[in-house]
Length: 555
Image 1: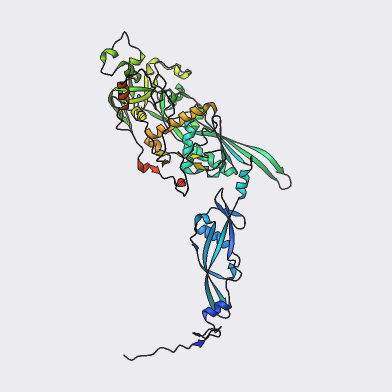
Image 2: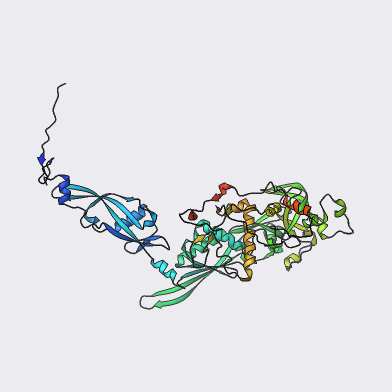
């Protein structure tokens, strides 16, 4: 095969340094061309960007503030907008150069091209340094002043506890609804949410209507008006009232309304609360769903709440065969838990069957329950003691005595677990953990309970009961976010003794110095319940706000 040489490459000498180069219109090498022409002229090598530390947003010229993560495409676009002279060159590539997070510096590498002289394109790579200047955006400036809110959402529930708002606080945090809130204030029977825009308040009202049964009403107040431009300035207030019925409450439905609800028995318990609430008849397992619209047509209140629950010991359980979902109907024999602590064990038949010395504490009750699938002889359950109860309700008084059971069991409880006083490996977050930290979240106590005063102990008891409900109810845990906390200590809601009569205070038993050592040893050696629904590790989330340099965890 014959060799064919390629075309000859003609070279010329550079006009400045004499280096052989391929001929071009300038007759200059690349190095001499860069020394002669600077295509970065007119582009500043150092500039600044404005950053608001309160809302963590950057100023995007000319007046908008944008939320951008470090080294993100949004932040890069903001940095490029701050540069002057980029319209005279062609930008081919731009990226961030890593800097220390605390240096308050941003470094960006740019690659640009520009035509110089005649038909000669020159490319150059250079760096630009941005100084991050801290300031306040207009929205945060308004927040710094007082009484600058434009919309208010007043959430109320006329009950004697705060468990609903503790649960509502966790739902708000899980869905991120608190992001647009200026501040949150605790008032009697509820919370007030303040907003800078009316649309944010409407969004909160719609969120509340989707998670709890409510009714809402809006009003507006005229602040100022301009007759020339036909504009007005208003303040908007939205009143939201939550249905005063909570989970595990004892409810007596008015007889007329009970007949309309599939002829259900008037005496029911509340098993679920969402945008509507569900009532269950423990005797027949019949359920009914009541929406907020149906409830407010003929409202009714609860006969008893969880603070009226009494501990019972299960003596015998016999399923009756009726099954509906997770509920299994069963006939049970129960007795007050205090009967065995003061009168011996269940095997002491002489103490139990002594009719001459018998009292209410040693009496055995027969009842029908919906907890046949989880109750076993020897377990402890919480229920309402109706045989010696006195309710101020005309609907309850109108019921025939044959339809009123002595005992209504509500849920299973785990007293041995409470006696061990184990440290919880999880914790909850809260909104605005301290005064003056509006809009922030943290691991401390939130807006519920901030008022203090006489009700502070009651709020702490409600908070402990809420934590116990989360531990014992896996379905309830699935609706909130739990965070891993190694050093979180279990709180003692009662701070001492449990009230006599077996009320819902299961943390610490009353200490009696007259008890012998053997009795105390039996309580300490009590075995933990095998079926306790413990919080598993895969259910916990990592609290990333505490995984920063120099962060100290609250203990």
